[in-house]
Length: 458
Image 1 (cartoon, rainbow, N blue to C red):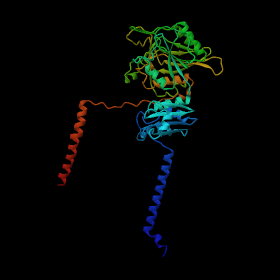
Image 2 (tube, helix red, strand yellow):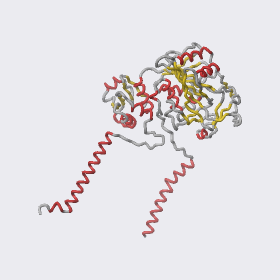
Image 3 (cartoon, one colour):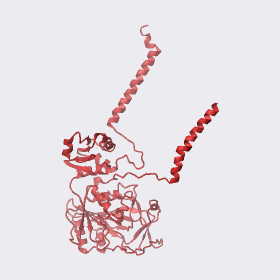
Image 4 (cartoon, helix red, strand yellow):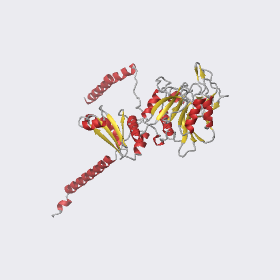
């Protein structure tokens, strides 16, 4: 009789409810525990706007030393930065993020050198770098500068009609210069005419589409620089004459590249696949989506790049050098040798059919231990100009070349992308249709449905 209450339905029901509550509480507790230690999110946007890039994952995921990111702003504005910086914090236990209100902790802000709200500083290995804005590109760039340290200088050759880094027109290199400087490099201009010698502080030498022939002393300076362990990026356009715009053959420089195992062909590549037209490009701007296995392009799979007014390249064996193809055009491309007509015409009977190699990378054996020259040759200089630098993978490919040339292979990857502009453009007629639908037709439909229901019930 005393244990009769244990068999009662009410007692069993209470026990079941208590057990279920304990199980639910335990499950929620475990989930909360795991969520605090394993912060996962899923980005369903088409351009992965809320995901960190491959480069950021590689840099932060491979940290071997402690890194601290300090964000200085009003406490009420911390959440604006958490959306981005917390993603960095979740990638590695070696990285930490501090949110500091400079008004509440003025001593710390003054020590760091904070002048404005929203300042971001990255500290690593005793070095401190500032990110200019709250963006992945700036934060990752500051992180790379703090980790790498030192000064890497990119020298642009001038004096023979090369594209200028201070030119903001369509054909200029001002955006290219800005991109390079955001990625832990400094830039300067050198003239091999005034003094035929490459400065010793040049990490990478850039020959950006010369329109006039290089004199032999300038070519000798480039030869000596690379064969002594220097690094060079050579961008050479077809020797064409379109109206008043004419590009010389630059025979001395072409012969030098031939001695390094790179044959520069006198042709112009035309892409007849029609894919470029989807991007608003002409057939004189071949698209590339076929890459080899070199470190420069290994991460470029399924990423298109575009090369305006390009010429083809070939590789051959040569003494002390090793060359590798980087990327090629599609099979629906042709090489025309008619370089003097302003109207480009294709002759399938005479013109050679693709695919064609547009980029080559090579190394020169200097004979010194751990010292080798490196060079990259591309049959177009316009692919990094202001007009097309932002096209798909052009920026990634350019910086991958610099990273390989400067022996920073660990930075080769797909970099942060700018937010995609997905604005909705409507005509006046479409806007009126939406207005009438929302303010008139839909309310009338609801009223009509209500009257119908009332009438039936009546």
